[in-house]
Amino acid sequence: MVYKFFTNSERAWRAMFEAIKDAEESVYLEMYIFTNDMVQFDFLDLLKEKAIQGIAVKIILDSLGSRELSDNSIMELRKSGAELIFLSHFFHRTHRKILIVDEKRAFLGGVNISQRFRFWNDLVVETRGNRGLVHHLVRSFAKVYGESGGKDKIVLLKREPIILDKTRTWLVEHFPIKNKFNLKKIYKKHLSDAEKEIILVTPYFMPKRWLTRVLHQAVLRGVKVDVLVPKHTDIIFMDRVNYFYMYKLSKLGINFYLESKMNHAKATIIDKKEGIVGSNNLDFLSFELNSEVGIFFKDLDAVHKLSDIVTEWKREAVLFDFRHYKPKILDYILSPIISLFGKIF
Image (cartoon, rainbow, N blue to C red; front, side):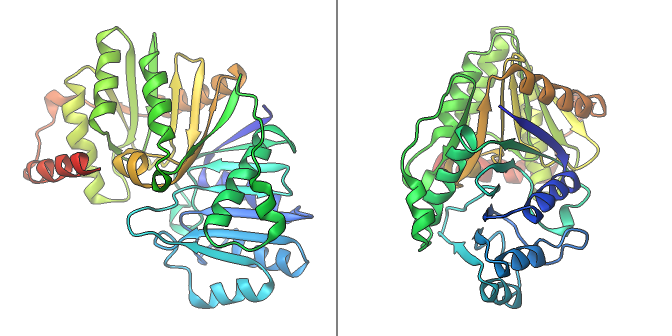
């Protein structure tokens, strides 16, 4: 596949912004968090400008994640001719982050669009071409567009099934609201088949029992399992959750590396032969409740490029040692609550 990785918010924003500026026919954007506080990259104004030019601008936002988008901004977007849809379900969120330009360039990964994420490390992959993976992403967007109430018949027609060559790369669509739990299938199968090494990158680590079991079984058969997480996340509660699970699982032989800088990336590398990049965290929200999207690839050039990125992050991280960590009172309070959620979902 033709690909390019972007390793922090600003690099991804710059590439996405320039792609939208070059749009000649269409811009499809699906985002969990989209706000109107961007300074250097004013996506709001750019999308309005493109819609006024007559370009088909279709935007799907999660109603909770993008709740900070002002009413004036919503009105201005719609007035410009852009179609803006909010997806809302009680428990289920659309956590997907996708940008497709002219149905020839596509971006997906972990990056949201809000100024507060400016200095974060993150991971977005760009792919190009009017067939294959990009075509499949267009279809995926069109499906969500239709389910969200989109009315444009041209976009709705793009929901028709297509054949995707799965020998090297394929799209992973995950829709718990429709009982399609594809992430679990992918992770369970490929982590269980790992022979030498598993590397996981996630900002929030709250694994279900099946994932804990699969990782422990990998360790028992001699597979090296490394997990990269931020030393401190943007959510204090999740810091406690991360450390709670690190303390438990490091005793099983799983290695945790603490990154000094907030890293919002979501990636998996297996035996340096397979890779996954997408929007999902390693928590019950992503596996059981949120709509997610990612790519699974066996293209060795892509896997090696991803490995180089993760190796650089790992080089600057510190190994967590459970022997030097003393659980706090809050950990013991959160423990039964976390376990309860794990059983419910």
